[in-house]
Image (cartoon, rainbow, N blue to C red; front, side):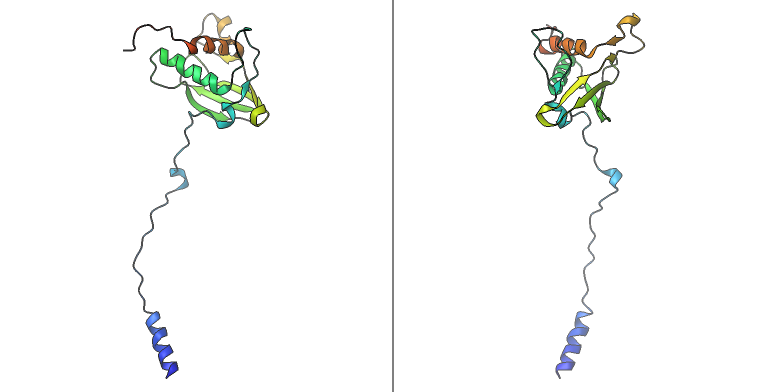
Length: 161
């Protein structure tokens, strides 16, 4: 009798129907959202710029502050885009592609980690369209000074259109 009961229960269990459940599609790994390439990489935000200061009264600056000044400078010209187009990790640091037609990608050569991290902004190529030719290449220190002077205050006195 016990064997018959076990046989009936076992056969009843084998006929249990499960509802059809569809799992949400996970998509391909290529469909994953791309990280914001305009955001300054976290390890660069507090990295000190190692370029020599152009003037005694100019304070030391971080890469994050330089980008902030560059965005402010563009905002003074009523630009609707950020200075940064994309950051690319390189073997020695980062390459910054900008939304400025007048500036080729900026190269930051970095060393150290954490609070001791420092980066050097290499010479900047302003492009073949720059005349005279002697003004085509700008030292990183001069570019930093320009952004420091022009990103703090805006020369525009009229409101943007």
